[in-house]
Length: 107
Image (cartoon, rainbow, N blue to C red; front, side, top):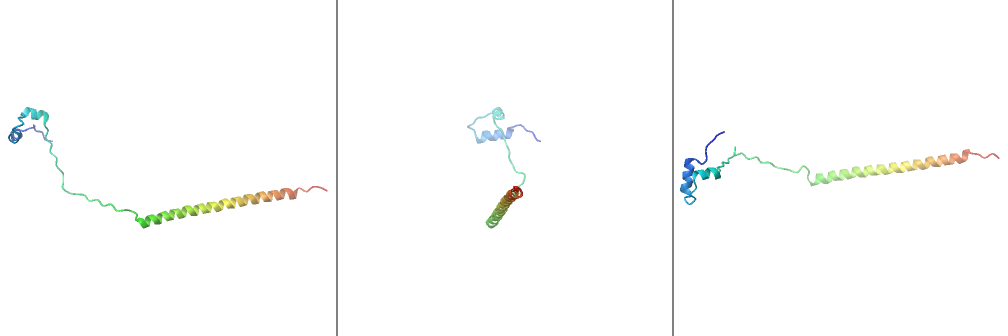
């Protein structure tokens, strides 16, 4: 870390020569001016290239695959529901038939 007083005598003299109309004293400059030096560490440039992970054809193919899976799953669910309803009707039908045929009324 370095330290120095601002403005140096040379800088103050240069300011008086370049801007004689300002008539600014060294004390005023120390209270109201600041010198900032900005620099770069290195002159290398990093180039970043971005490429899409999916192109249009892959996106359409992936979407179609997902829609196909969802449609297939919904059709399987529909057939399972129809099978359940058929088994339910069959069970009630057999229990109803058994109930009336097994209870014989004596003559």
